[in-house]
Amino acid sequence: MVTAAWCATVERRLEVLEQGQLSKRLCRADRARLSALLPALAGVVGSDVFRAGEVVGSNHPGLHLVLGDATARSLGRLLRRGEGVPVNGYLVQQVGVEAHAALWSVVQVVI
Image 1 (cartoon, rainbow, N blue to C red):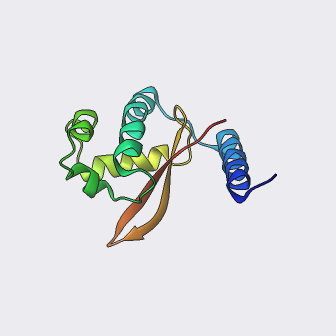
Image 2: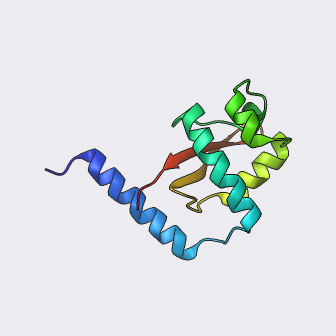
């Protein structure tokens, strides 16, 4: 039986595959930072949207550990560079703008 959830999963996988073929490349440093950051973000915010400033201002110790001395601006730039690039099973996407700041979402993808 084909369900709506199954169709959404297939569509997401197809998008990731297409983006992977057309996407920009990340430098090793960005890939390493995103490899540590995206699972932590997914664990803390789940599927909710967030602004970089909210993440930097969070009191969550796990986020502080992976963020280091990142500012909202530097985090936002890192997320923008990584947008649409699968990194260890996670994908960051800009989903909108609020108060002149990008709204981000992290999704887990399985290929």
